[in-house]
Image 1: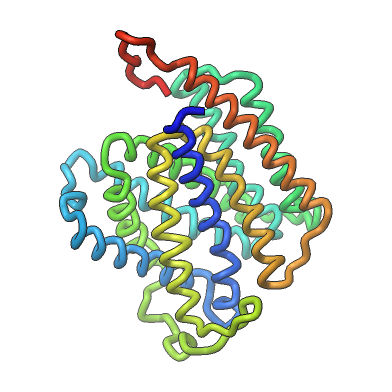
Image 2: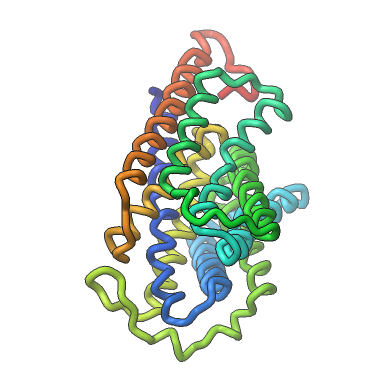
Length: 319
């Protein structure tokens, strides 16, 4: 495995860890009285402000945008940031959580189909096997058979969430190779913040609830600390690491490795919120890890075989 692939894998794993704990951190805030839309607004808007201020001070040149780059940045923000969050919240209101998680994480299959039929890149059969195993493991982790009640609007929202998640990886992959990833994430987060603020204006946030105590494992933090944590750890840092990883890994691989997120979500909810974790979910986590490992190994071998020999240049677009 090359150093570049190792770096990309470490980044996407850390990003998945940060994304995975977001639900566990945010749920006590919603139990205290905030709506999912209000949590999303606080999460994305605060992350956008922190990124914008931090980049302006440390690396202001990253905020310069050429006219032709705005469509990519807006697409990243509206689909990969705001779209994923808002579609997911619509979905969980109408579908069992297990099915909601499975629908959102159908994105690796959509990315594989895009890679095969739009980019016309032939994927090895073993990689398809790894994707299938990862999806099977995800279904076991989500326990999709528990409360199968399909709502048409919820189903459409789920498919839209999957498409937005796929767009996050595909647009992020392109953006990370044409711009500095931190610049892409910063402007994308700003665009996403504007979108969610239109849906749920920040002035409707119940300020009186921000100081209310909550329960997170053995701790009793106030609501505002949870919002800050989910904004900094599970949004700003998670997006920055995930998009940077796309400089080293193709979207088809990063999206499968990112399936570790629901495993982290399930485990953290069990450890800190007391939510049950069955042996079926543990088995599903192992199957998911096995599938993601297969995809990663196949990509590593392809990357190694694609390395140019001395005196040759690597062809454009090679992994």
